[in-house]
Image (cartoon, rainbow over all chains, first blue to last red; front, side, top):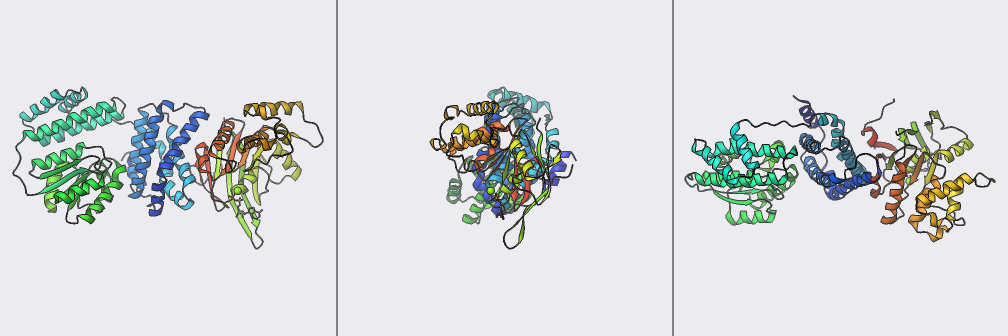
Length: 358
Length: 238
Ligand SMILES: Nc1ncnc2c1ncn2[C@@H]1O[C@H](COP(=O)(O)OP(=O)(O)O)[C@@H](O)[C@H]1O
Ligand SMILES: [Mg+2]
């Protein structure tokens, strides 16, 4: 077990945080983020050391996201995920030439802001996991480098076409693989997903830009449609499913794949994509009465809204079955179980899982 | 390099509240550094002022040692303490408490005045320099009543600076100020704190102050419950 994993399992033993403390954190979050940002602005102004100035925009984003993730982590006692998220921040920033001393300072700024804003007994609870992170920071700072290799040439070739933004060629390439005997699922699972994961890592390593990544996402989305349209649909099933990202979730590709896959299996699919607010999703459900509702969440910070929506659906449509999926849900598997009828780790589980629930 | 300005060693303080003896500062070990803006935070009655005035040799601890320049000074005579206080520390309180009958310049010179003796040329030069540095040069001969609350507080900081103290000890210096003046005061103190021969210690419960802190010591019921310096863990004897 590597040292990062050791810390993660040690983190799991941290005590749960009281509901009251979590709601205080939730109320104070915007203020806390503001105080943390201010700390960096003030230090830039008065202290020696390399100023962050040009990085300030990234830093503000990081602080906002860290705060949101923290709330989710605390709400569901996902301390191992906290380590993971922080390690992600560390490597993302190291690849952008951040100095080592940013990280202890950032943690300290959060601790001071929490101590300063939230009443003592609650602040004491809330800082514990942050202190844990601080104590183990050196391990995280030593294990930040991410190595990632693609498994084969096909993945590599496809990824390069995506990065070169050659939509036509990337599409032709996948169709040619289809003709040479790959199934659409083989392609999604064996080529599209690994290539997109790798592209995410390249962004993290600061080797490509956000717009490169977005362009790759768009092309991949287009290819998924083409792949789905290229195969004959199975016999129609008398079942309806709603597929949606949870409110606030921008990462749509996973939901897209599940939707297309279920469609290919004969389901009637209602797809609400990303950024649909709670209300709209609930309206769609009451209009079309899908037997199964499949929600995906990629970012940890969207877990609270995942759970909220799931609770709401259970209340308004108790007959509907809820399936949760997506990277965040998989990471928080243990805690998410009670909020769904089933969880899926891989989009290909969607069909059988849904059938089983009916 | 930051230096230890004051080291508190097993310090406690009790008060008699008329009925019983109460421990208002439980056993405390702390090193206070120069080149640092240290904030002492905590709810009202948690012992912040007690701690600050012990650091500043105003209040005598019930037990424990106060190390300055590697010597325990906790139980020196009142005269010795007064001299050391004057030389080592500058104090800033919630209200500037300037002497209304004296000009800004005279107020700043108060801590240099040795009874009977005239103000030295050196002190006068220091006063002018500090007022200039604080952008208050043109107010030298103004009377305190003519200044805004923020300006008065900065005069109080100038006064605290006159003897080139190793620590500026401030008790809620911004709590009576509006946002703008409190920002100016905090900027001033922050700038002063980033010097290897000087640190700032501030007692506060004003959240606007926290982004200025390099270190935060959190008190609760007379006990240090968190200290960003020691990673929140009990500090052990070195
Ligand atoms: N001179 C004194 N006599 C008796 N009790 C005191 C005296 N000074 C402070 N205390 C008590 O000690 C506790 C801490 O006071 P203080 O240090 O002023 O707290 P803070 O500055 O955090 O508000 C309070 O309960 C206060 O009532
Ligand atoms: Mg007080």
